[in-house]
Image 1: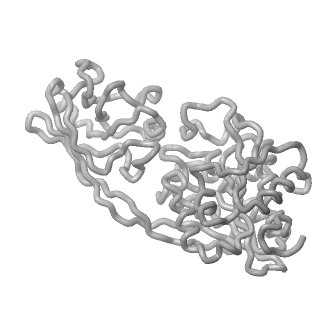
Image 2: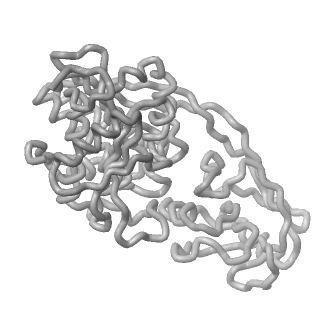
Image 3: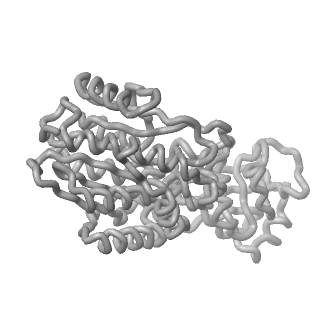
Length: 392
């Protein structure tokens, strides 16, 4: 892979420029789009947005009712994140004994009042729900969402704490509701056309959003930054056929960005030579890379041969990675490749605020980046024979 010279320092510099929370659809995500679009403009490329509408939840006013008093509450995390990572119901109506964490009654299934934000203990054991006095810091939500023992949680204003503490020991009722609405989102796309462009296209994608409460340097500011390096590579060395680069929103939520893209472009699926996903795998804690591939047998065989030709033995797995942006492409029958790596020392959960730029490995950015670029180059040059493309 010597010919594929990725500049890891330039990738890291771009990561630093988007080293802030980029939750799906947020102002932070928009700022990251603008930073990257500016860099693409400087390369003489013309990025465009593909906007779409998708479900969201607006939280209606909630309250906790104790001794005939109603105290307003706000769910800690928007219920749109309800799913495998978090119990954040859109509608809640539960009862339990009100307990102060500082003076617990020991009653099981209590609704616990908490005034501190211990990141090592996001939940009180046995609690049915939690109420935080004051809004927790943004990064606490990442620890909260990453915990296995998830229960509904909300926060209340400091001024309301005395009312609740006077009623500890009594049975209270916690309620909230939400209204499903549509909200605007977008992906960003740029194309580099080659002299033999025939309607076929090789695609590389990375999600630009970060997990709630994190800057997500490895997952996935790295991927968003590396796509800029791909754009630079092909701007300077035109591909034989069209290469399309896509920055997806919403991977950390429900892959809504890649899902929307594939749905909107389904008619083009047969012309996609390969989708290469770029996401994580380049921290100091990640191990050796492997390539996860999906597609028709003839493409899998070609991918296997091509990876074997790139140097030292690199494992090739003929299966998808799962909950990432390859999934919509797999379902549409598009061949996919994903250079991935497992963590050597798995943390309790990969989506934590500790994923910062200082954890990135320049050697692994070079290694994984060069491998991703080699796969994309092979696809657009026709080296993967399962699709019709120009000959190498």
